[in-house]
Length: 402
Ligand SMILES: Cc1cc2nc3c(=O)[nH]c(=O)nc-3n(C[C@H](O)[C@H](O)[C@H](O)COP(=O)(O)OP(=O)(O)OC[C@H]3O[C@@H](n4cnc5c(N)ncnc54)[C@H](O)[C@@H]3O)c2cc1C
Image (cartoon, rainbow, N blue to C red; front, side, top):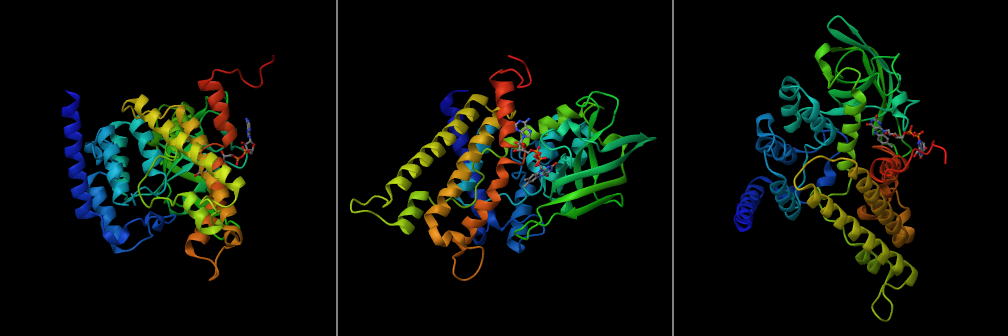
């Protein structure tokens, strides 16, 4: 197809997307993506109506196959939809828990037709919440040391063990679980990936209270919990590969790619407001000015690298190891921005709540603290660097001699 013809088709899709958003996205929700809480229970009537419209259209998961409730769009159309969502300051309220970002794509990669037909449509419509049960008290970065056991007993798996840091487990209907199914095998070889119903007596969640009061994750206990034999995702004892794939999807969702919602106020504008200007009209503090310029450049480089990675992928949705580069780069940019914001706010950057601080100031402080987790979840900063060293640069294992 001639390029101009493809461009015309894309522009016609843009008009369709814009008209649909104008008709369906409630003005009352503009830029309020932050309304989304830890669970799907959050929000009022407008949010529910918007979620339903998006789910019915399949545009909460624009590139997933239409036969499973997705939008059936190609990558270029999905990018246009994203641009139009950003323009309208719209957001995706169905992207809660781990369903859309991690479990759904992994089921699409590895699931049987029956597993896809059962699990994908409810995720696409935002009807179920999923969590990911990987980490254990003695298995974090060294995930393959996990000890939770699943034993086949007739036609069902019986699961025993403890997970920890399970985000949103207390709200979840389902869990994507890594369990040891062959204790005699080498540690990476005896693991399987199971799709486990959380609503059963054998599953107990204990929310972990953080210093700031919130409990975004849980300790999760499996005591003779059960799952049918066909809850196995991928092959028996090959769950390590399935699990790594899910992590690539997780990292790909943490690259700082735009997701719609409110645009961030540019840092120089905040600095002008709080620090003031010198006689030449520049931000008054020269040291801060230099570090802001450096940050702006890093953020721009990250944005361009994201765009290059998307262009090189040529529509291929495979996240691959590049996601590790992008996750670390997005983390550095976001954490540096948060540090600089607090420095710029000065004393106003010390507020947790109370009338002496604006909502924006309190949000900046909470965002700064919450953002520390970015370099831990989905595999820590150092673990991503190890992946880049081994899988992209081809460097030897650190344990090797010489
Ligand atoms: C907000 C949040 C949400 C989370 N949600 C989930 C969830 O939903 N499900 C889930 O299963 N888990 C979840 N986790 C857990 C997360 O995956 C682990 O915290 C993470 O993998 C690190 O493991 P760890 O905490 O045991 O730290 P450790 O593995 O003990 O690491 C401690 C430090 O040592 C470094 N380190 C360890 N090994 C190496 C190495 N080989 N080379 C270099 N440095 C190394 C690490 O980088 C880190 O700085 C979540 C964590 C957070 C913070």
